[in-house]
Image (cartoon, rainbow, N blue to C red; front, top):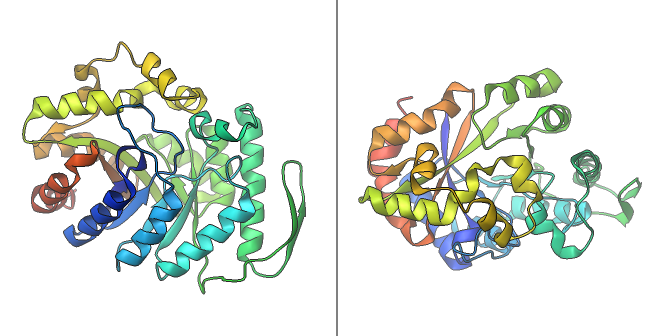
Amino acid sequence: MTEWGYTMMCEQSAPRALVDDVVAAESAGFDFAVISDHYFPWLEEQGHSPYAWSVLGAAAWATSRIPLTTYVTCPTFRYHPAVVAQKAATVQMLSGGRFTLGLGSGENLNEHVVGKGWPGVDVRHEMLEEAVEIIRALFGGGYVNHRGKHYQVESARLWDLPDEVPPIGIAVSGRQSCELAGRLADVMIAVEPNRELGAMFDAAGGSGKPRVGQIPVAYDADRGNAMQRAHEQFRWFGGGWKVNAALPGPGGFAGASAYVTPEDVAEQVPCGDDVEEFVDKIKPFVDAGFTHVALVQIGGDSQRPFVEWAQRALLPRLREL
């Protein structure tokens, strides 16, 4: 049976609101929660981007049941993989074993800030593979030394290790990333309901492992308001991963989506309060074999009404799928 998740979308809410909202989502019966890890919002209209790992620590302490996952952290530019390992181990302990470390090769939007440039995807995947090697070595305990192509580690050790280390998820979007995830990940992460991604993940060694998807939604009693909010804050979403990974800032996403209309967005994103429309647009993830699907309610100020409606109307219907 598919599990249904709630997304702490750092790009659209302030840190205290993110924690308060995931507490409400836990009370409403969501099965798990994920959090984005950004330095910039996609668009200026979103207006936020707090430090995800501080929010995670607070969320781990404020909740008691709901599993938490980064969706996703890039362990190759802003963060050294040795530091990611330390952060993940700490959150796993704070949450009492409820954390999954979701990793990806990153977006220029967030990683350019440290001034290391933005290499091609082959290099980024090389860096991700080496980063995962370092993180797993540190999770194994003891001192770690590493002399690699992209990273150096000098006598590093995690002094606080959880009894059960966090599972590692890897984001996929094509053959190369699926092969990487199938070999190295405990969980597949994707943002499109593409059955072929799962097949490539399985062929590379991922058969039987969980796969987590994510879809934006725009709940509002007024469908017009929902469409307008979805267009204002999420019109970038349809650009495709190759575009989204390459653009350097909110201005670039605004330019790339300048001719996207509210109607264009509503073709992909369920808008309003028609439960069956939401189910119809979410169901492709179930059909594609995803074991977990996280919902992103668009609009920071609309989280509580969405959570209440989801508890009352949407989640019971989704659990029938």
